[in-house]
Image (cartoon, rainbow, N blue to C red; front, side, top):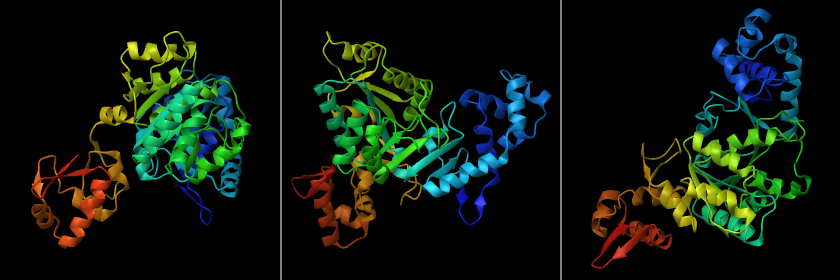
Length: 376
């Protein structure tokens, strides 16, 4: 995080807030301005003539940038402090890694709740607001299974599939992230206030919009790039051909993320968007195993992992204790004797045997005849 209640905001954060609060500066204009002036502070100190050299900046926008008041940014920062909202500045170490690599990441990310390094291992679930019972059940089931596998579930807190995805993750005791189009002072839709509180307590509410931003139609497609950017892949459930969920899928494709689609009835309008995605190359999924299989072996996103470049073969490994993870690293897909694992781990035999039993119960290893063990 880039601020402290005792020391005040980081000047770079304050400059970013000041520029972000100027009407007419969206993600693409922000990119263009930074390409020309390198930093928000550089933009704010540029002359009107210099600003108008940037493609898309006319006299009106240049004047708005020149008139922008740092006091407004400071007021926004103080309001965040009062509301318990964290601010993550693009380019800082605490900014989400996956999101930082998309073409137009938010310059400042507002967060109510707690972002963790393990949230880099996330999958989005999106779909229709007007879903069927099949869609609701599928969303909850998939979200719950992903959560139990140690994967963070990302969605947009909208009615229908989004809400079911968040609830499914919460019911499974997992983590979930909700990306707002509005500011964090506005829960939209309003009937999801309790759901939003549950997400904030077991994950985070995130947005690029200022605190007081009210819902506007154009903000929802824009926020969909953030949902995709936070995720390794996007699952689409029950999307018609005009569904906003397809915007999220397109963003995922552009960001080189995996796109998954749940098939539905060929005569249902709710399924036509998903069927089109499958026809065009999205991965058809029948359950969580299809998702995990497609994502494949993963590098642990946790920076303080015991072993650099430690390979994660199954997302459930992220939930292991240090001892369990250390012992599992000595078990390969080829059969090894338990004695070899004990020697490699350098621990007491009883401790290794107990841990192997736990790993077997979690379906990460399997016992073989003759005192041998292997990864599942």
